Length: 120
Image 1 (tube, rainbow, N blue to C red):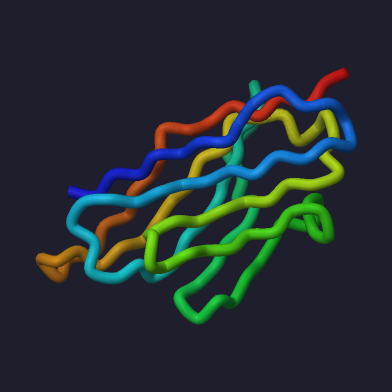
Image 2: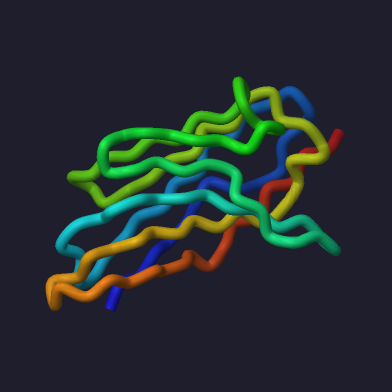
């Protein structure tokens, strides 16, 4: 009932920037919180950043000061601005939204993932 579509991944040189977007659609009454995760080859999926419905944000230590999470609630969209990218940021990035649907049920929905590769 809720779908997420991510975009904005790609290949970038070290020190470069990318902006990821994730748009939610379907039976959305309210979005409670939004997260970005990433998973590198051979590693577990890790939480990168999160933002609540009151705009409180949190980040994993390795991206603090370089990544910024933001949202446009009118567009059901969450963004991840990634600056000063490093090769260790290479991963598939996933967004997740915790949504109260129009049926007044809670839905934890994931996007399909977008590849970010940082390499010279």
